[in-house]
Length: 376
Ligand SMILES: Cc1cc2nc3c(=O)[nH]c(=O)nc-3n(C[C@H](O)[C@H](O)[C@H](O)COP(=O)(O)O)c2cc1C
Image (tube, rainbow, N blue to C red; front, side, top):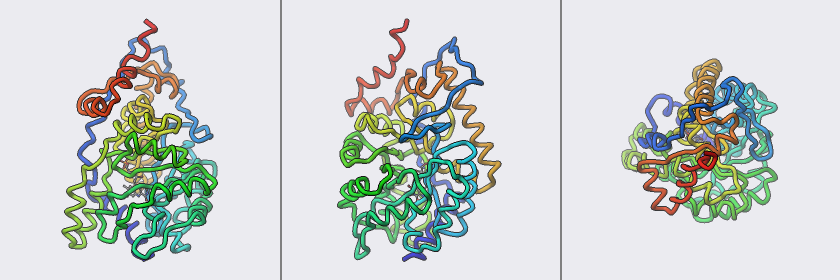
């Protein structure tokens, strides 16, 4: 089993770098329009990007999403991203730590991140399917979760929700019964804040409410429109000649709640929890849209993976441009800080609007659109 997990970690990275695994719904960001201010009264050189997240002050509202670890070949990705997390003061996650919980000698492929980022806000990672007994495999316990946290000196623990991905894996875990209770138990006992983290299919309003009641401290909506774990598994299955499983992944490549919708729904369902907008955030303008919709952080997976596979310099280059783009959106909306951007007016149009109105969020959309108008 452990070799299988270890091998899968390397395959995920190889496949996502070699094939297009994006979900076709990326265009939904264009449904969110920020309102331009002709005299914004903000100096582009003096923008304050800092945010508070789970009790820590971060320099930027950017999360290097949970990606990898668990195979010697991918340690370099965590190492390079750790260097960047330290340099820019970013929050960063490691990939699922199951491989190292089963095979402790793989721990250094994760802990290299802490070695390179002694001061960064680091997020450990275990999967919700592993919190449940699966066909004879025992469930992870609170001690396992604590071991994952300790392995990287983590400041928080993400519990990833990837039941779509599991369904598209030949060897995937099939049982989802008891996942919420498993999360509740870990949130109560692990000793660091727990983040409920989807991985490409999004979080809706009622799910966000359930998480809040289960005691999680934050939600990463992991919406559709970016990297598709189903597409990634479809490719893996095809490569092995398992066409039936591959067809499941291909069919469900586009499944899920797109990220902008998930941000609005999750924020409404759990208004006291910080929301991370992950899934298809590709530019600083996408990030600005997500923050105006109510997110506290934006998470990026593939863009960091791709750049880190090249070099540290490539990650810096990507990030500097992303921040430049975010800064322009902030200036033009008259937002000198992230808190101001979160109060900037946003118009939600198109199918994103239709969805949210049908789901009963019309009033929120109206309030968002009319922010600041009373100043006139
Ligand atoms: C190669 C790869 C491996 C991933 N592994 C994990 C994982 O182990 N745990 C997790 O929570 N998310 C994992 N993810 C999901 C990412 O954290 C993120 O939610 C997803 O890539 C969507 O963001 P993006 O569209 O910016 O790539 C992985 C993503 C990729 C591309």
